[in-house]
Amino acid sequence: MIKSKTDYLHYLKEDQKALGAFTKHPVFSDNMMILLTDPCWKFEKLMRKLEYWTNCKTRLIDKPYLWILRKKYQRLSIRLGFSIPINIFEEGLCIGHYGSVVVSRHAKVGRYCTIHSCVNIGGTPDKKSATIGDYCFIGPGAKLFNDITLADHIKIGANSVVNKSFHEKGVTIAGVPAKIVSRNEQA
Image: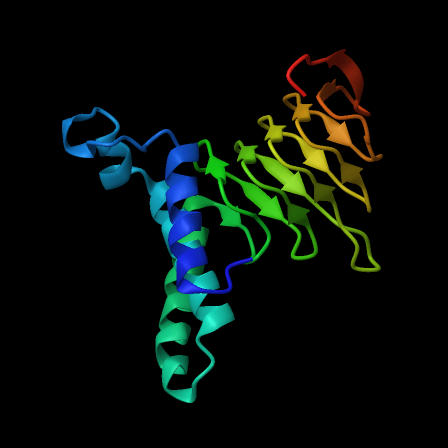
């Protein structure tokens, strides 16, 4: 969670790296177009800015600008098809492309997560939701629901339905319902 301006700048830098748009000389790189035109990057920048202002700016004089940021965030979310509350994702978020992405406000997602379109991270009626570890990949169309926990370095296949916890690091899960289909060496 962003708790200072230093955290805010760190989160932006790590999100930029995760999107593949970080180079030492961005003027001379092909990736510069990501920073200028990618709607997912614009969304992530606005999300981090809103997180910073919500968490760190508590003076009464800051409230009008915070309201404006919330309205901009709401409009951009609707335009891109995202329903992502703030303070859910740690640094290094990579949203592959825009499309329907729905995340419960009770979910917690670790660092360096890659998420694709048509993903749904839902919760339960008693306000519990998924807790996802670091360095996870969530494929297109994956559905995660219930009070589940996923370990670090887990890859979730496209169109998988994950409704139980996986505590083993470095596995690939897929299917309906999801089960382990392979074990990765890097974890």
